[in-house]
Every structure is written in structure tokens, then in C-alpha cells.
Image 1 (cartoon, helix red, strand yellow):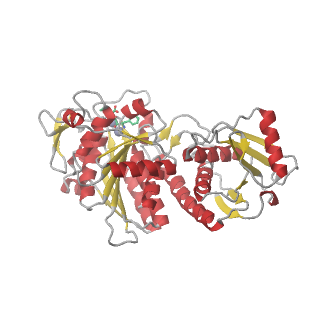
Image 2 (tube, protein in one colour):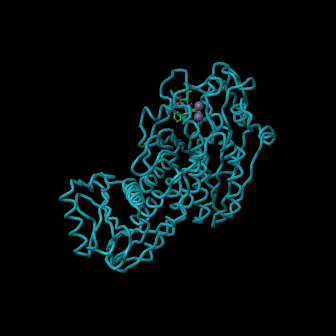
Image 3 (cartoon, helix red, strand yellow):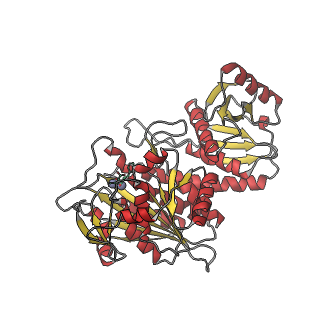
Length: 488
Ligand code: BES
Ligand code: ZN
Ligand code: ZN
């Protein structure tokens, strides 16, 4: 999606679809009376209520230059979130593309905020995404789509800057989605490593990959225990962005990247197991964020670490009851091989410390329990530093991703103390699944290193078609991370 901004009036340009956002049942328009009248008449006569994500496409029959109008509901002012705007923009473009539109236009007025333009542009780009490479009759559409923001915008320069950022972020989101949506037989640890090093080369990041032998040397035995049952070797992929401030300490982003999670010997039930190809989505969000960072060049140095493995049952697999010594030196009883994410992460967190980070943020599709707690409309955030947590929650609000804090109490830490080893990888009580997973991770980060853990199990992918996207990876987390890093 090619986005641009012009201060020419909205009705001066012939395009095939005019997107009009509707808030409080009123079209968000200034300027052209003809357009306002058309939109208002449609709202009155069509039953279009302007609820969040509601879309109505209708032909303009030569009454104005654009040949269609797309009404896009934003609900009411009260309760408005950036997420609503971004998703609605995406839904509007999807509906337009289905109706045959290629060149979109939308109005901006004097008071149009860069944040508004940014969210609409990024949502619109997401609305063009289509993952159909495996359909024999499917083909990637090569037509270039465009979106023009038109109107008497006071600060066109700031608007254009917002567009440039949105464009770079969309590039990162759409290209990484193509990797995130690949199934476990194709997106193997090696394939992900190749993708990351190619991306790094193209964008000026440095990339290093640790294979099985290196991981053994570096004592990453918890990660190796996850991969023990798989024919595919584990990897740790590290991407580095230098930053423009050489004195600044880096922030480290860590992503759980399980290319397929069968549960291992603690095998998952068959129903729905296929969705576990998305168990790599913590890593996919980190990859997306690193590509955004490479393109936007913020001040702060950033390091991205993907801890990659496939979790399979076999004669060589880790057994429930096995005890291993993690890279940190802490010993772990692996009582459930399906709680593998925390094992892959604990070694990566310990490696993250070697970079003397200013902060560590990890993202992981870690627990089914987070879906019980929050459903699919937000992720849980836990950590050891309330300032960092609050900053990430705020960045999430601006980036259109909802985060909700859960505590880690001493009782939760007690729950994951081992009987025969220092720790066990599941809680004794069987309660507070998301928190005990966080409590386990907290054992690997000293109190004086600000750390946050985001459990994206409920938000990393969608399973049924939504107005703003088809089933697939959402890359939840990347939008929060880039917003946070821009503000550092
Ligand atoms: N990858 C899963 C978590 C998951 C579940 C993600 C559902 C997305 C949707 C994770 O590795 C896992 O299996 N966790 C277990 C932990 C349990 C054994 C303590 C879970 O949540 O059941
Ligand atoms: Zn699992
Ligand atoms: Zn998992």
C-alpha cells in the first residue's frame, strides 16, 4: 500500500474509493458539502449504525469524483482506542479491495493528528495482506494499491513523517507475516535463521546464529532439552541494532520461537494441535520489531534474541521427571514437557544478561491460562519493575495493543520451587498458570535488571475470519515494542 498526503481538497481527486470514518454516527468530514450530504443520507437510510468495525460500501453514481464511498464505523468517542482505528482502517480497505477498488482516498482536516494518520496508514496496509501461497488457485496480487490522505492539514510535514514511519512498520509487519504464517514443516529453525540473516543483511543489522554445538558449549541445556525429541536442531538467533547513541545500554527483546509445539512426551490432545505452528509468534514479533527498528533507526541500541526449537515426542525426547542444569546454573525438574516455552526462554534470558541490558522484554505464547484470564483481546504483562511495565502498557495503548498487568507474588515463586532440583517447570498448585510461568522466568533475571514478560498466547493469531484480517498471525507485540523504543 503506497500512502501519500496532499493538502488539496478531498473532492479534487478522482479515486476509486473514498473512506469516510463515522464516529458518534456522524461522518468525520469537513469541507465538501456534497460528500457530507451523501454520507449523511446513506447513514440515515441504510441502517448503518457506525458501530466499531462496521463497514458499508456504496457507489456514488457520478455525484462526486470517487466512484465509491466506504463508510467505516469507529463507534463512539467514549471508549475509543487506537486499536479500533487501525483495525477499522484495515476492514475498510479489505471491503474496498473485495469491491474492486485499488486507489483509496480519505479526508484529513486542519486538526488531523500524526497519530491518526499513522494508525490509518498502518491499518490500511494490513488490510491488503493475503496469505494464500498454498492455494493452488491462489496468487499474490501484484497490483499496487494506494491511499491518499487529502485535505487542509495544518501540519503536513508531521503527517508525512507519520506516513513514512507507518510505511516502514507495515513493510516489517507484512513481510514477517509471510514467515509467521508458514507451518512447522516449512518454517523450521534453520529456515527462520536463514530468514533472519537475510533480513539483517538487507537492513544493516548484524545477525549471529548459535547451532546445537554452540548451544552445548554455552550450556543452554534447558533449550536443548526442548529440542531433544525433534530431528531439527535448536538455534539461538541474535540480531543487533547499534543505535545512534553509542553511550546508551541496549534493550534486549527475547522471543519464544517454538516452530511447532506438540507438547512432547506430555503430548497435547489432538483437537486444535495444528494451531501450535503459531507457537513461534513471540519470536516473530521480535523479528518484526527488529526490522522496524532497522528501518526507523531510533536512538537506543536494541538486541533481538530468538530462542528457537521444535517440541516433539520421540525416543530421544526429554521425559517428565528429567532434571537438567540451565545455563544460569539453576537446576530444573521438567515435570511437564508441554511447559517448554519457559525452558527455551530461561537460557535466552540468561544470555540476554551478558549484553548488560538497560531492560529486557520477552514475548511468548506461553500459557493457555492467559486465554482463560483475558480472552483474545489482550495480553498479560508481568515483570519486576513497575516503571517499565507502565511504559509498555502506555506504548501498547498508542500502538493499538492491549496489555493487562498480573502480579508475581512470593507464593507464586514458592509454587515453582522443585522437590529434587532448584525449580520445577510447572506449579505444584496447578493454579495461576500465567503467573507461575512468569514466576519461573523471574528466577533468571536479577532484581536490578528491569524485565517484563508479555504472554501473547491469546493474541498472537486469530482462528476465524475478522473484519480486519483472515485467520493467521497478528504479530501482536511488535507494535507495542516499536512504540516503546521510539519513546526511549
Ligand atoms: N504453547 C503453549 C501455550 C499455548 C496454549 C499457546 C494455547 C497458545 C494457545 C505452551 O507451551 C503450553 O503448552 N503451556 C501449557 C503449560 C502447562 C503444561 C503448565 C499450557 O498452557 O497448558
Ligand atoms: Zn507447550
Ligand atoms: Zn509452547
